[in-house]
Length: 348
Image 1 (spheres, rainbow, N blue to C red):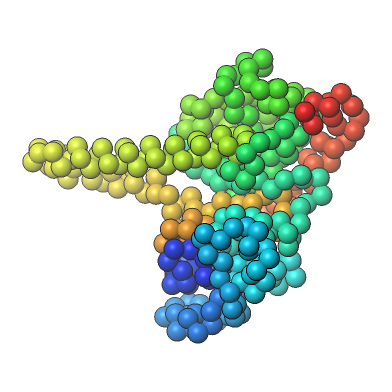
Image 2 (cartoon, rainbow, N blue to C red):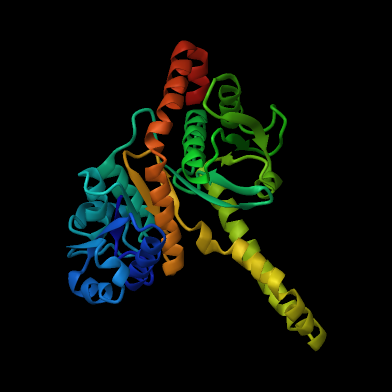
């Protein structure tokens, strides 16, 4: 399996990228990588990682897309950038997927331009997964689409279910629509219309119904579906809350010698909690709906986090994600075609 890596994307690239690739190949020896970036910088770094010497090919890229570059600039002015060449490697069949820790907007724009959308999908959606009380759940959209109609939400449910099968290993995922209440009459028209379609059509997943904010951490469903504005707000609020709790714990254990002693006694349990909530384990958001596997790593991650994102890309390729959603997309299209009034609701 060959994964294309944008070696110049990210706050700590390219050293972080090679470190992550070395960690990932130690865990998955079958992986090979195409590294796109400045060959003069990459060659000496590659020499520091013996595990990569037989599994990496460097392809020189003369340009780098910066974190502040606009997507329109990336499309027009960076034909030889490390990001674009890595995406084109997927299009041309040289790699099974692409991973970048670079500019999110540019990665989205370039991926959509180069790879195009899958038939039956109107917009790409951004998805990631997180720990819950019952294990792990996924949520989409995380910011790619601020406004969504019912049709988009149903497509996101189909895409999210495919992700749960490929990455989370759930044979028949349970999907829920995020809403302000569990009752069928709650929420915007778009959410209610999407809920009706998901309840009545026969998809390859189970529709739980509407879920609320507290259902996310509880793990009530395997996949939480919402628009990009809400999803991004929930994601940032969750990350901020986790950091706040960590700060409070640190302050509490430093307050006195008694609390410091308590920390020593509680350290094994705290280490276990820290490992469970380590964001590096859940690094790697995917752009679903494209003709190819595209993974976005957090820009500030380290080698361990980048290796986790590589694992997500490998899982998506191995799980044959794009094939797994075709049947559900056909069900949706036939359902809408058979009932004109449903098509009206889905496009509202």
